[in-house]
Image (tube, rainbow, N blue to C red; front, side, top):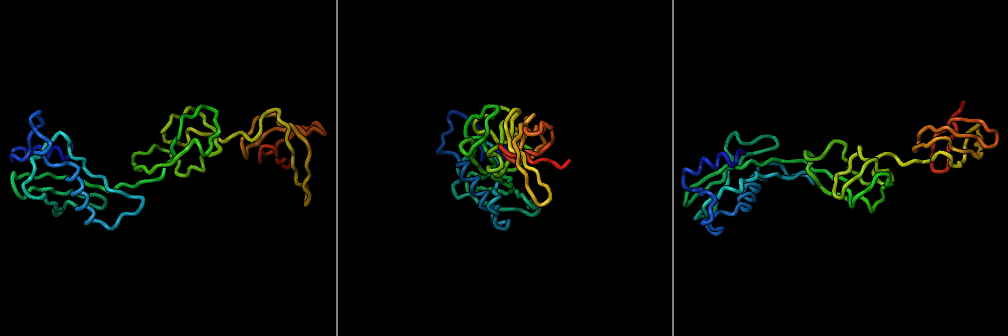
Length: 238
């Protein structure tokens, strides 16, 4: 039971709360959304202005509780000891009839841009800008390894299926292959102040900036290099 429901249930004895029944009409009860907005407005007065990466999380007030509509506008206040660094408890009270009061917790939560799958992605797909979109989400709800910059995901390969609308994490992605086994590539070797280029063949798959075995087609010698692009392997000095 939440703080709101527990305290409001206790207030039932004050005849300000009715249990949910078919006879209870919406026009006879207090609008919960308005109460939450009132609590948020009061909470906002207790803190410095929020940044664009923060928002208030209110309650929520238990929807099963039906507060009888107050004859006067409800009031909001924060008592001593109800204010913490990132959260506050707001008391909402009916100053008219029937008398009731509830306590609503309001806290500040951080948000972040998060990269989402714009559509279902199958294993092996190299992501493009059409595969991703962004949303603002509460940081506390995000999985470990979430990606806040969509450009980081673009060009990487899906290592597992990603459903549409899923938060994309680094566990879903691997770097795209720069070269594949059997592919003809250009070998580049720096010799002093000179750069020498020659034809070669990749003997193994390689990700970008990963070491790969290559064969020099002129000499037949097998050497090791670093895949720098889809066509270029930089030979490592032996």
